[in-house]
Amino acid sequence: MSTENNFDFDLGVVGLGYVGLPLAVQSANSKLKVIGYDVNEIRVSEINKGQSPIEDISNSELETALATFEATTEQQKLSMCENIVISVPTPLTDYQPDLSYVISAARTVGENLVKNQVIILESTTYPGTTLEVLIPNLERYSNMKAGDDFFVGYSPERIDPGNEIWKFKNTPKVVSGINEKSLLKIKKFYESIIDEVVIVNGTKEAEMVKLLENTYRHVNIALINELAMLCKMLDIDIWEVVDAAKTKPFGFQSFRPGPGVGGHCIPVDPEYLSFKTRQIGKPVRFVELAQEINNSMPSYVITRCSELMNANEKVLNKSRILIMGVAYKKDISDTRESPAKDVISGLLDKNANVSYLDPFVENLNINGEEITKIETDSNLSDFDLIIIHTPHSEFKNINFENISSLIFDTTGSEFIKNAERI
Image (cartoon, rainbow, N blue to C red; front, side, top):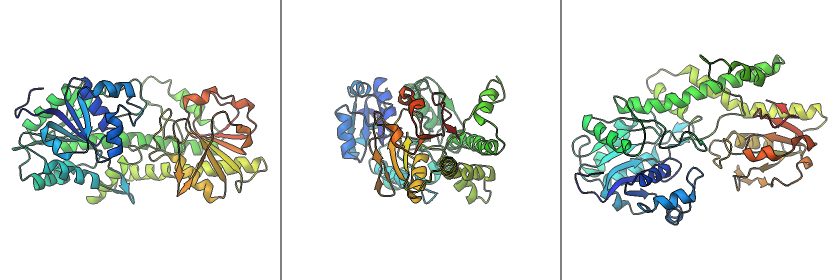
């Protein structure tokens, strides 16, 4: 890419996690010169050695990218980048948006900002963050004017860990800018690394796109979870209902019931939307009801398991329970906001002895207690109850029909026949 200031790097990525590292690797493999900045020294060292900390980027992909990409803890190098993308976490703290990482990143970038740089926020947040939080901090620490001295926009990330079809490059990218010059520069940057760029009129619209995408999923998952509970009471097989309904080629998209919602996006994004709408005195009641339903699912799972055990003359107290899969989705190690944590916590409160089996998760700590991990070749019949939480592909190799334990399946997996289902 050509630069007005003869920058040494085409891109600087702030935050090398689930969003930032794929962006950095894809950009480097698109022949851009890239710096990745992170405060985690261990992560930076591992990346520079070609050791990827996330599943979506293989070590070989990372090693190839390192030809034009380097990770660093030296924030001064950000001043050498034409484009800077901020992709830091935006967690919830006490159910309130926590923008401390965004504010810290804005200060770091602002203190090293030079004229004509392009600053893009990708972190999930509520509408107005770019204008109300990012830009004031950038201007404060740089003593420059956004839109004149440097250029700013927002582009929501669309990373889907474990998705083998829609990867970083072929997933359309929504972009925005605070003025026309910002937008043109941001559009040009993303067009150099992504197949399709979609323009929206402003940063608030782009921020809202991300919230809509995941609130849509959140609400529909809540709908199917509520129907699952209703169908149980009516003695209806919800899984058969869903499978039959999805044969309709129009007007219906299939969602499946489960133990709750996990990952950084679906449980978190609707809270950001609720936070913003409450500020204007207009709560999104439909969304908040969905949150209530999905948040209740781990408790519902425990209740159903207790009923299953009681029907077989067993009790949860001091029982041996195995949770199969604790990641929030199959074939990845990401446990962020995983419902498994709430299920395990609830079982521990009922004095159950809980272990887990997950080929992707090396250790799991719940409320300060280290949960025992067992291996696939262990005798699964040693447990009073097995809860299938995450349908990892590896579990298809297990002959569940030879397991004498009670089995409660939250996933509706076809390879498990002898289980009580959610």
